[in-house]
Image (tube, rainbow, N blue to C red):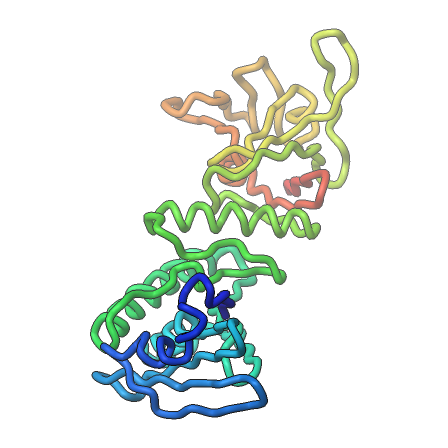
Amino acid sequence: MYYYDCSILYNASKSREKIEKAYSDAYTIVSVQKVGKEKRYTFSAKENPDFQFHTSLQGRNFQEDYRLSRIKYFFEHVDQSLQGKFEIKEEQENGLLTKYEIYRRVNEIEEVDSAVTEAYQLRNQGKDVLIRNIEGYIDETHIYITTDGEIIHETRGMKLADAKDAARNSFIRVKRKNGEWFNADLSTNASADILEVYLNGKPIRTKDANGEEKPMTATYRKDGYQFHFCKEFFDAIPGASWIDDYHFTYFGVEYEIGRPNAKHNLGFYEKDIQAVFGATFTYDSESVNLAIP
């Protein structure tokens, strides 16, 4: 709800007359209610009487819920199958809408893309409803995608593909902040995180160029977690034997590392390790454990 000083919008001596005439081209006053020093007006669209909004005048202070009423109207007139996927936060004060916001909650990363798509569908249907019935368009900042009580996306003038990427990245950041970890390779362009690598519950330790011990790590990239292989990693895998930085054997078969065109190749990401070793991955806030039979 907006609050105005009528010295800006209206000549104070004629404010009542002007507020009654302000919407006269497209709207009709259907009721006027006096509550103490306040005068409340209900307007109805001439072309579509079921759309109504309210204004209030008290002294020189003017309030209206025209914008929020338009959002409420379009939401109540979109397809019910789409409408049912969203929730509403609505508040009123003294007969005027003070809040009307549209939300879609997601709990799993697999839900994010469809939620964003449906939010854009809702926005576009809303535009059609308003243009067809009362002229105008939807206020795009009032369709939100949330997880764990935090907004991860709100519909704006962003391309759908970019909106999906942004929402997935925000989803991952919220989940990580709240201590939830998962195989995040469904996301693109997520913030990098470095994890210590465990194999079958035991930490993998190697040495740096100065001979000092350090943990084997995995770093988040746009394609998932990239693992930084070392001799100690292969030595700890049953049936594997390290040869050099680019070769190892696994149950007698020689593999190359990071050579996609090789007959037997091991890439650096979760899906590659899973394909060769049948590994599964468990994440927490500081480490990733690979379970290899």
